Length: 174
Image 1 (cartoon, one colour):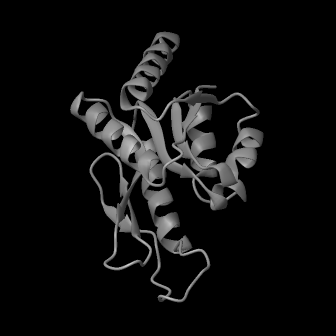
Image 2 (spheres, rainbow, N blue to C red; image 1 turned 120 degrees about the vertical axis):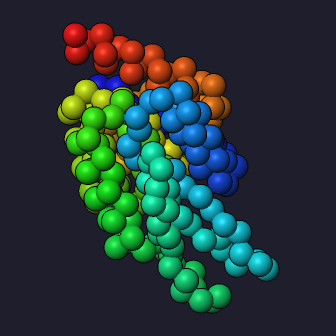
Image 3 (tube, one colour; image 1 turned 90 degrees about the vertical axis):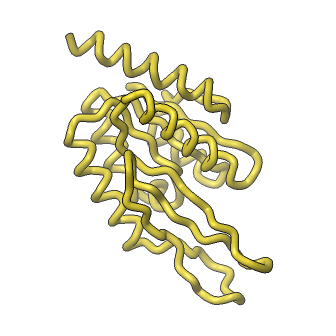
């Protein structure tokens, strides 16, 4: 099982790193499935809009709901997330080198979201890289059986691991 995760202590940094990584790998000709998150800051002090780009080239899907300025709960739009999951799963079946998932979040921790997609990719022998936050860390480690490798939130380190994992997958497929 080739699964790794990364996390940055600064809000939004993991999203930026994974987006840069996906752009770099796509430019190198690697076929990726998954999502990267794009946050758009709002004027004032309101929360950002959250969008995901379905790899490799879109569409971009808004996964946050506008619940108003006084809202304090989760703003994730579950239907939009499931749309991104469905598109990712269809691309996963189209022959890809790896899966990148912007975040193993609350939905994945509860058995929904990208959890099944990650399991499918691993069962196909594909390397998987996910973003992780501290809130869902225990659920992720339980899901991965403690076998996930922690990588620094640096594009070069992530690229090195993913390319080595892809090369290893190709060698075992021969």
